[in-house]
Length: 191
Image 1 (cartoon, helix red, strand yellow):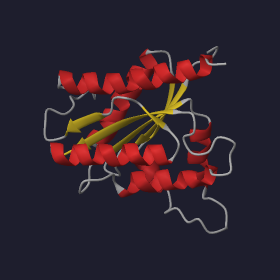
Image 2: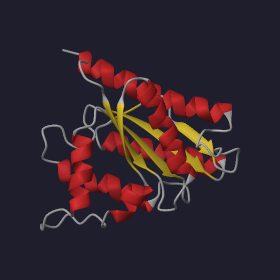
Image 3: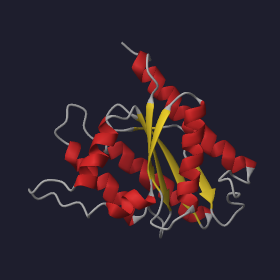
Image 4: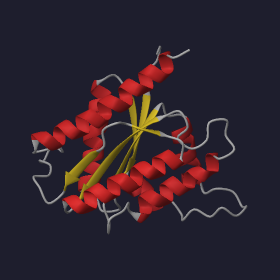
């Protein structure tokens, strides 16, 4: 790859300082340390997206910006809280909005590595949400990375600098970022 891979982080919650967005930022920092250019589409952005409406009429400016960001990405990291055993509504709405790319030569997440991060207040919700998100990524033609991070938000959390307090959680976020960057570079090097 002659240029830095572009990794888009998509996720968080509409609550400022959510553990989901902090986890996503940690992963994006690791991607940057590995030489990637990153872009965060976090909770505030997700909250600005109108509910996706497939009827004719043209996309809202923020919906068009989301579609363009994903089109330009070499890899994506999606982070969602686990709400009632599945992904949050704002993350699902963002993923639904990618329907704007359906007629592209490479629609949705086609040919892109997609890392997954789940934060949940308990392991059961983390596991079911991770499985749901991975299934959605498959449906969107993405390549889920072999490792998906599942963090129990009832645990240690993040310090005042935004770093993980728990070494195992930090390792998980680093691993997701490393796999997305590595696969993006491999894809770019393939003939």
